[in-house]
Length: 240
Image 1 (spheres, rainbow, N blue to C red):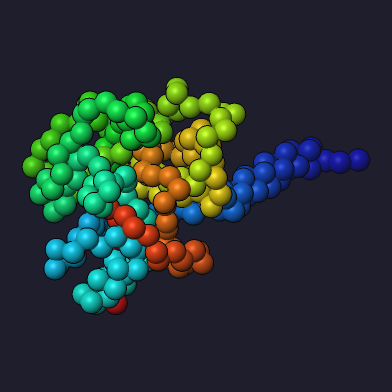
Image 2 (cartoon, rainbow, N blue to C red):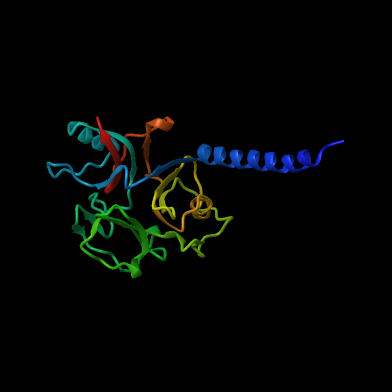
């Protein structure tokens, strides 16, 4: 005869098994990197010191190494124009290099609500709807994209669970403790699946960055993509 303790223990073991299985499944289908902006050096990049557009993760890696820094994570940071200039707002080191785009148009960028991911000089990350964005001198980095994946914890209502609009996709979300989640799918997914990932990880707001052109560099998880032809690149470095 089983004791009461065993009856109580089995559901807990089952729950633990399912939780571990779900997490492994996430890592199987997505490249996921969690950043603490108060402890790690995270920046947005577009051009190098010679005013040349970086374009690829490999060029960013070489640029970082020339400054005795090691690139530990990188991902494309939003959509871009044919000349590799950022699509919409782009702020780097407190300088607005591209103005905010509040127009209407076709394509993913203009799916509503459009949004902005930014970081302040105090290392506070934020994601906000473009229409609610208010510029101030404390904003050190910013990139605009669309659509928003999560808005105040709720999934963007335009997404459909069974949508056949599949693609490689990447995005960014922010946890309540102020840490940042970057994720890129390893296989083609729809917007709903990507938004659901950020929601299950505890993000309140999340923003779609880009689609099939997406690349990620995360050697610690054996995911190394150094090519690309981007505008903005998000990078995390540490001293060599």
